[in-house]
Length: 223
Image 1 (tube, rainbow, N blue to C red):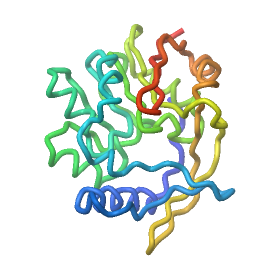
Image 2: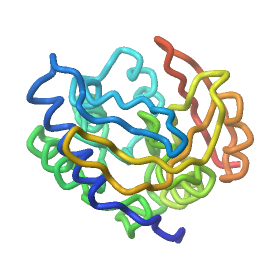
Image 3: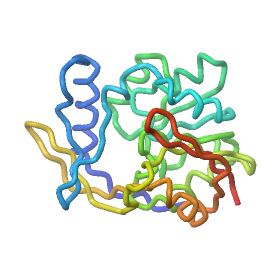
Image 4: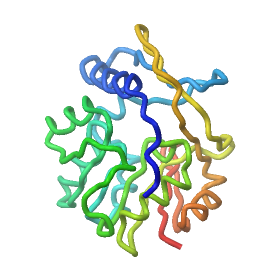
């Protein structure tokens, strides 16, 4: 099993609090930022995470055969949408506040890291790495390899990646709120232009790629 990356508890707490604020005050600007150590700010769509499934997510969900594992599920909007379609889906997230929000909404969610021991290894039909979650741990090929170990041999990973022209990079980032700042932790960005290379390094092949409302998605199958 891949080693679990170090987790900054302050970042986990700030993320959960950011979700709570977005849910309680959807018309107010987000008070949480993701900042790279060289100063660039990364996207963080908290309002989207706490809302209903967007139109551009729909095709990604249709590409996922059950049972589905939603990695970094947050408040569970994808898990809930799949369940309403009759697809067995379980989320996994390290944020206790996010897990609590998801469960209150009726989503089946495990509080854990994707690098922890998880149930159903070798039997999941699909896994979701949406909302930039291919960046978890800062080493996307290793993350794909870990997720692949949980899937059945014919399983699929549905990923969301950065648009063309964005530089793929492994960076250190931190979360910044008005009243607190987390420690630096590893993250990664994967541009759609580089996805074939990253997928191959993780043991996968890109079988389909599409964009919707300026968001980019792909389906990966084991090589």
